[in-house]
Amino acid sequence: PEIAEEGNLKARVDEAYQSLKYGLVKGLSVGFLADWEQAEFIKGGGIQFNDWEWYELSLVTIPCNRESATDYSKAFEEYKAALGKEPQKTVSDGASSEQKH
Image (cartoon, rainbow, N blue to C red; front, side, top):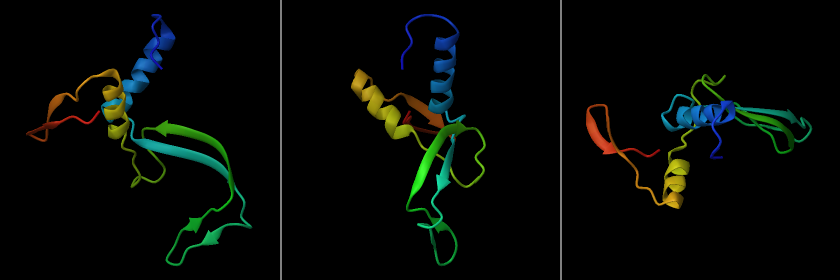
């Protein structure tokens, strides 16, 4: 949410938004309680949980599975479009591109 009133809450919300926007926070942690009687073990590895109870969802800087990452660029594009703002131009890896935040 956009916090209009100055103070600690506004600063924390703005920091969280900027951390996502600029890619400082890319990890996602999901805490859940699995129904193991409904779980399926996938050939080649992994488990498919067909029934589970969700307990928490957190943004993290370093996820347990380091190969996992989140991409919020589409959400930021939609947010800017809703506000009538265009994506900003930026330089990435020495090449000019549209920033998708």
